[in-house]
Image (cartoon, rainbow, N blue to C red; front, side, top):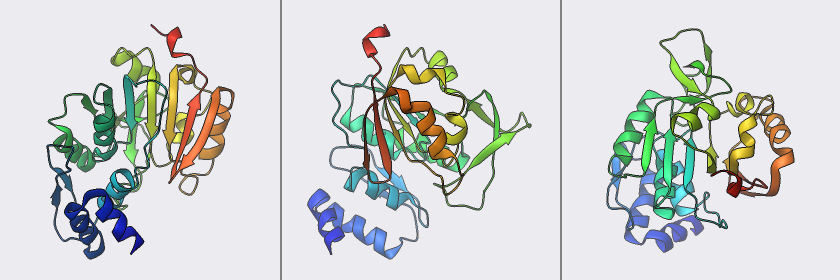
Length: 247
């Protein structure tokens, strides 16, 4: 009942319908029209889409008060674009780069954000070197695909944060959101140099899927921490980096 009331308080009649979709495990794709977002968001049946929607738009697990308006946001592990859409609503002037490696997720990501001019989609995985990846658990749900390095050049393109910044001419990243199902272990290995160019990291760690994720993340970020807190499944790490040092 408490969850039901929260849905209603947040979105009224739409909240009631969303709650029913969640409880009844809707059999087909549904389109959700948020009051503050003119285009419909498509959610797939029998996936985690409705759960992720609830975490982001009902519980607002990405909500954070920051000192300055962000200019650059990276959504690594964008899935179908819900976090990117949320950020575009909260920070309409920010440039948002949504990165997703899995084909079916990426296609729906493109569809969901096609009318949002400040979101750029890129089909790739984030890794600790520029290489190729493959999905290692294709039988899993859409939100929990994991990747591993591949020797096949026809695989999924993988890019580093440095390469991403170079491609998009980014001197600094205000918010780096990371939900990459265990690949954070590789991403944060070897104390990456790009850590000095990040304002805030919002990350979900996946030690249950890959042991060592927590250790790699905290080893790489320890000397940069100004403030840290948790909201839902996410860790928010605000760095002590000085944005003004990057023109």
